[in-house]
Length: 119
Image (cartoon, rainbow, N blue to C red; front, top):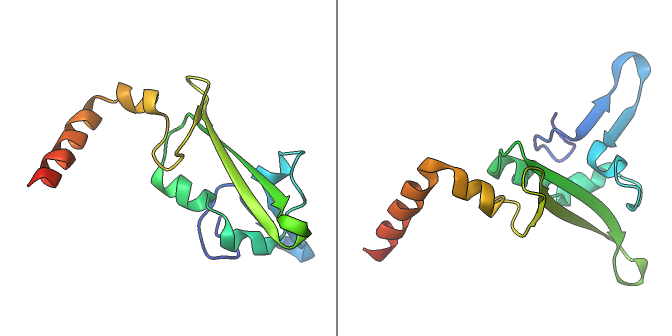
Protein backbone atom coordinates (compact mmCIF):
# COMPACT_ATOMS: atom_id res chain seq x y z
CA UNK A 1 0.00 0.00 0.00
CA UNK A 2 1.21 3.51 -0.69
CA UNK A 3 2.36 5.38 2.44
CA UNK A 4 1.66 9.06 3.17
CA UNK A 5 5.23 9.72 1.94
CA UNK A 6 4.36 8.19 -1.45
CA UNK A 7 6.37 4.95 -1.17
CA UNK A 8 5.06 1.40 -1.42
CA UNK A 9 5.27 -0.52 1.87
CA UNK A 10 3.66 -3.84 2.73
CA UNK A 11 3.56 -2.94 6.44
CA UNK A 12 1.52 0.26 6.05
CA UNK A 13 -2.25 -0.10 6.29
CA UNK A 14 -4.97 2.52 5.79
CA UNK A 15 -8.73 2.13 5.84
CA UNK A 16 -11.04 5.01 4.92
CA UNK A 17 -14.01 2.89 3.87
CA UNK A 18 -17.44 4.09 5.09
CA UNK A 19 -16.18 6.83 7.36
CA UNK A 20 -13.32 4.94 8.95
CA UNK A 21 -10.10 6.80 9.56
CA UNK A 22 -7.49 4.16 10.29
CA UNK A 23 -3.79 4.44 9.49
CA UNK A 24 -1.15 2.18 11.01
CA UNK A 25 2.29 0.73 10.54
CA UNK A 26 1.97 -2.94 11.32
CA UNK A 27 5.72 -3.28 11.77
CA UNK A 28 5.73 -0.78 14.65
CA UNK A 29 2.45 -2.11 15.99
CA UNK A 30 4.06 -5.54 16.41
CA UNK A 31 6.93 -4.08 18.45
CA UNK A 32 5.96 -3.42 22.09
CA UNK A 33 9.27 -1.58 22.76
CA UNK A 34 8.45 1.14 20.24
CA UNK A 35 6.83 4.49 20.81
CA UNK A 36 3.45 4.99 19.07
CA UNK A 37 3.43 5.47 15.31
CA UNK A 38 2.59 8.72 13.52
CA UNK A 39 2.03 9.12 9.73
CA UNK A 40 4.89 11.64 9.53
CA UNK A 41 7.37 8.85 10.29
CA UNK A 42 6.82 7.34 6.84
CA UNK A 43 8.83 10.17 5.28
CA UNK A 44 11.99 9.21 7.18
CA UNK A 45 11.48 5.43 7.22
CA UNK A 46 13.95 3.23 5.33
CA UNK A 47 11.79 0.07 5.33
CA UNK A 48 10.21 0.68 1.87
CA UNK A 49 13.68 1.14 0.37
CA UNK A 50 14.92 -2.05 2.06
CA UNK A 51 11.92 -4.01 0.76
CA UNK A 52 12.55 -2.64 -2.73
CA UNK A 53 16.24 -3.63 -2.63
CA UNK A 54 15.86 -7.03 -0.96
CA UNK A 55 13.02 -9.39 -1.83
CA UNK A 56 14.21 -12.32 0.28
CA UNK A 57 11.32 -14.29 1.81
CA UNK A 58 13.56 -15.02 4.82
CA UNK A 59 14.09 -11.36 5.72
CA UNK A 60 12.52 -10.34 9.02
CA UNK A 61 12.47 -6.64 9.87
CA UNK A 62 11.87 -4.90 13.16
CA UNK A 63 11.21 -1.17 13.44
CA UNK A 64 11.49 0.77 16.68
CA UNK A 65 10.63 4.44 17.22
CA UNK A 66 12.88 5.96 19.88
CA UNK A 67 13.23 9.51 21.19
CA UNK A 68 16.31 11.48 20.23
CA UNK A 69 18.58 13.28 22.64
CA UNK A 70 16.60 15.24 25.24
CA UNK A 71 13.36 13.90 23.76
CA UNK A 72 13.46 16.28 20.80
CA UNK A 73 12.30 14.43 17.69
CA UNK A 74 12.17 10.73 16.95
CA UNK A 75 14.61 8.19 15.51
CA UNK A 76 13.58 5.09 13.54
CA UNK A 77 15.81 2.07 14.16
CA UNK A 78 15.53 -0.83 11.72
CA UNK A 79 16.98 -4.22 12.59
CA UNK A 80 16.98 -7.21 10.27
CA UNK A 81 17.46 -10.93 10.74
CA UNK A 82 17.28 -14.07 8.63
CA UNK A 83 14.50 -16.50 9.49
CA UNK A 84 16.21 -19.38 7.70
CA UNK A 85 19.66 -19.16 9.33
CA UNK A 86 18.61 -17.33 12.53
CA UNK A 87 21.36 -14.71 12.24
CA UNK A 88 21.24 -10.91 12.49
CA UNK A 89 21.83 -9.07 9.22
CA UNK A 90 24.26 -6.15 9.21
CA UNK A 91 23.10 -4.63 5.91
CA UNK A 92 19.40 -5.31 5.25
CA UNK A 93 19.69 -3.84 1.75
CA UNK A 94 21.99 -6.74 0.77
CA UNK A 95 20.46 -9.46 2.93
CA UNK A 96 21.78 -12.55 4.66
CA UNK A 97 25.31 -13.49 3.55
CA UNK A 98 24.57 -17.19 4.02
CA UNK A 99 21.42 -17.01 1.87
CA UNK A 100 23.34 -15.07 -0.77
CA UNK A 101 26.07 -17.73 -0.81
CA UNK A 102 23.45 -20.41 -1.53
CA UNK A 103 22.24 -18.67 -4.69
CA UNK A 104 24.04 -20.23 -7.68
CA UNK A 105 23.88 -17.30 -10.12
CA UNK A 106 24.96 -14.69 -7.62
CA UNK A 107 28.65 -15.66 -7.72
CA UNK A 108 28.82 -15.15 -11.49
CA UNK A 109 27.14 -11.77 -11.11
CA UNK A 110 29.56 -10.64 -8.40
CA UNK A 111 32.56 -11.81 -10.45
CA UNK A 112 31.30 -9.90 -13.49
CA UNK A 113 30.97 -6.76 -11.36
CA UNK A 114 34.50 -7.18 -10.00
CA UNK A 115 35.92 -7.65 -13.51
CA UNK A 116 34.13 -4.49 -14.65
CA UNK A 117 35.73 -2.53 -11.78
CA UNK A 118 39.25 -3.73 -12.69
CA UNK A 119 39.07 -2.35 -16.23
